[in-house]
Picture (cartoon, rainbow, N blue to C red):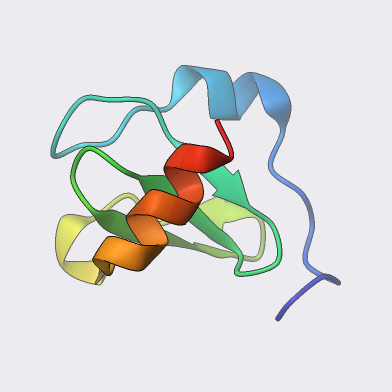
Length: 72
């Protein structure tokens, strides 16, 4: 949990899409990740900078995908 990390700029977040699915991303500030439910990936955010590289992302579990879909 990294709540002390800088938040993602809302303008930047609205412009970003998942590089794999080209779909929208959700920002999970508690986990400090950008979430792509379509690709089932979580991209890390380091020092306020999204790391949008597929092999840097972690795979989401089915439970995590359902959790994030409910939060939409």
